[in-house]
Image 1 (cartoon, rainbow, N blue to C red):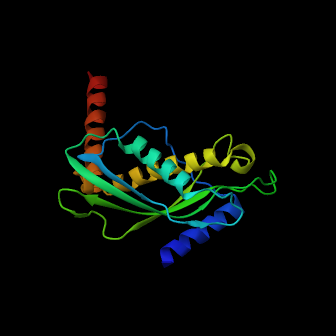
Image 2 (cartoon, helix red, strand yellow):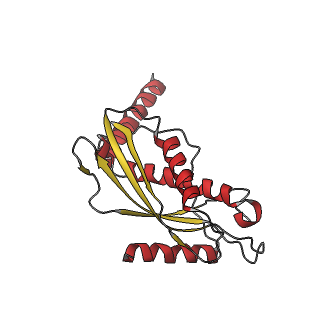
Image 3 (cartoon, rainbow, N blue to C red):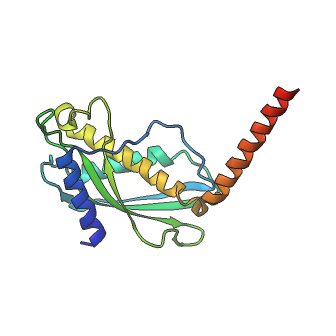
Length: 206
């Protein structure tokens, strides 16, 4: 097991014990992804590490949940180039019921991923990306999802958060999908804001 994965699993355990969470705005509108078109949806689930204080779940159920989440998040993009995303599930925690206030276990998912440009026939990322996915905050998870959700609901939430985190990862590297680099986007935004402010000032002066 690599250092990155061991570190991610350690973070998983700490998050469960500490009751930490990271928000994920999975209901946000779809964003532009340049020339992205979803190609192969490669999901590998082969006896992933089950963290402490976790409900067990089958590889088949995880595979189905992750596949659905990726298809839902990326299937509607119709760019000019195919990109394939490969995901290996490394570890998970599906929180057991705890004691409100005293112990509020959280669900966590750890995956390793790569993305390929079909036209170039090569990966777009130089190193595999390890993501640690938390369930985020909601009315149901605030007191610990083990108390309010069955494991299918917990798994679906983690899968959807994973897909959104992968989209965010792609947007952090926009040149992969034919979008302007982040610094250029920042410059364009600043220029647009300056033009808008000038237009408002001119309107006021007139």
